[in-house]
Length: 115
Length: 111
Image (tube, rainbow over all chains, first blue to last red; front, side, top):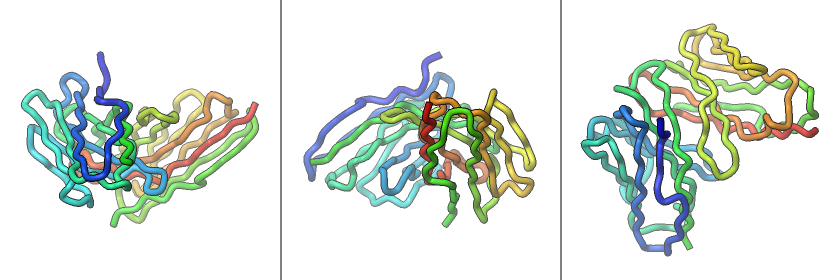
């Protein structure tokens, strides 16, 4: 059974540009969440989607957005990129409606470097 | 603000030694998960603990969830160089897929 798949794995963008990252959850999983990981801040929650609806949102500016499609695949977009957006962006999926003990599995991440 | 304090942040030990990593919070979690992350890769799930007081063992790793579901520990017995990596604890709050992560513990086991 394939794990969480993220594309692209590595990308370099220039300040002011926008970027779209893609995530395919584990087959059968309906919940997808996104995290940003940086050396200084660690892993921080961006947002969570379930059945194409955003269920939770972290404390990130409006430049960060996402969506989920009917097949549970998800994308996140960052507009007007800043140097500080350089990070590992991780997608995670879980089996069903988030509930107590619902295990969350991570993809390998997309490394974004903003120059 | 929900916080999960993880300690120690760095640990360098010799092969064969034992170690314990702690995660503490003032918040109650519905479950707590432990992950191990290699450089350049995503976190890999080690275990999920759900019930207060629960103890789970995974070979040389023992995980415990506090009775009040506010804290957890990871104990490694007879550490091996292959245990080297970043260990992360993450708490889930209620009916949500949002995880609150600790800062992580970088473990180095020297042969």
